[in-house]
Image (cartoon, rainbow, N blue to C red; front, top):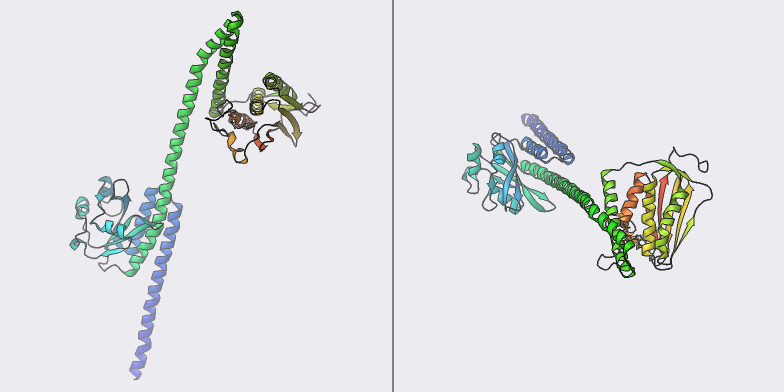
Length: 437
Ligand code: ADP
């Protein structure tokens, strides 16, 4: 009796110790899974990411080798993208493909469930060609699906338990947990790669477009110069009947020149243009631009009101670029406002900033387009139904000119009532105090 009593607590203590050790080991493995998962989310470089996953998989399941086999949608089969173990690089180098039908990897992929094969050589689904090609002998396999949002993207397999024991329930759980994290990490890395490719393509296309603009505008300029020159000369020499027709030729050629100039200006923004800075009174610049546009406005019976301060506002800026921005806003106001409309150009000094605005009582712009009209080639009206000419470049050029001065530009509008375009330029330190020049 007494013997029995003395043995029982010892046996129980032993059991308890064993389960504590078990628990400690399990906690350590879970901790390791957690560490690995955190590492996976911070790596976006696919190759090193896959290698990390495999190292973790062999470590946690105590196996000899591991592979990641992804499904290839285009080819409809599976291929090795990463592996560990002797001669493993051969798998990727030889681009060894595994069929979905009849293979172990394919079965795990299709059923989307983990699978244990204890005697691989005896299983008809074992794809022995792989072993032959890399001189490896697979004894046992544990495979887990890589699932991303319920969709299988591939399989992770670990091979040959080092102790030659069967795979445990814990091994299956470990590999499945790791596979779940790995699938998200792989998809993220794939998305980043796809995004990088898209950016690269976009940059290439942008370069093609810029080159095209440069060549086209250069090639168009010379013959157009000749047309303009001869048309003007003939108009001077021609009698009354030809005068009107030559006027049409001349005006059309001038319009073409305007378009080419827009293309050239756009290119200058792209390739980075230098500012030619000088000190000037903005009232003079507004006066010049308004005078230049007055005859155009007069053809539509429109009035351009100028709201200028009595004192000079001296800025240190690039005259021609600021003038171009204002000209584009003003010609738009004239173009889109109907006959007999009223346009106002105003300048103001506000908190060390120059505010320039062009207001019209034209058709207005829908709220959803107020940002987008500053994008290249964006026009509110569809080009097939447009009443007005233009390529949709004027505002993007104006924005480019303003941003070169570290300024900002925007539009406000009420449909049916009119629009106001404003640009603001910081008053440079170099500019003398207003009114002193
Ligand atoms: P374009 O005038 O050549 O079409 P812009 O870049 O100058 O190109 O203008 C883009 C679009 O913004 C115009 O097509 C027009 O739809 C709209 N827009 C610009 N200015 C006005 C305005 N003052 N009133 C109404 N719509 C305007």
